[in-house]
Amino acid sequence: MSTSKEAPYPSSSTDSLSPPPLSAFPPTLSSPSMCSTTSSLLSPPPSPPPSSQEDRPEIGSMRLVSWNIEWMNNLFDSDTSFLDSFPDREGTVEVHPLCLMIASAIRQLDPDVLAIQEGPSSIEKMRLFVEKYLDNDYEVFGKAGEEESEE
Picture: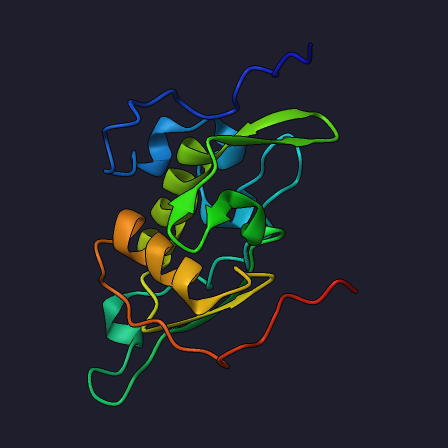
C-alpha cells in the first residue's frame, strides 16, 4: 500500500470548481513563476516583467503565453473524464487540486493566446479541461490527430 505525501496546496472540495487565489498556496506556489509541486509536475513560464497600465498599448496588443505543463496528459482517464489521482516518483498526485492550481495560474497570467507544450494527447481532453476548470473562456484548437510525443 502506498501512501501519499501531504499535498502542497490547500485541500478543496471535489464539488468546488472555483480555483483558490494563488495567495492561498504556500509561498513556493504564490506566483505562477514559482509554481511547483513535489513532483515538479509544472514548469510555467517566468512571469512577465512588472509593468503599469501606462506601459501597455491599448490597441493592437496581445498577451501570448507559452507554458510547458509537463505530463498534462496524466490528468485524464479518457477524452471525457479526469483521473482522481496518479502515482509519481514522490507519491501520489491528486488531480483536482492540481487542475485548480493550473487554472488559477492561467487566470492570473490572463493570456489572449495560451500555447501549451506537453499538453493532453487529444483536443477533446484539452476542451474538457477548459470546460471544467476555465469556464469555457478559451477556444481550443490544435493539430487534429496529433498524439503526444514519447521522446
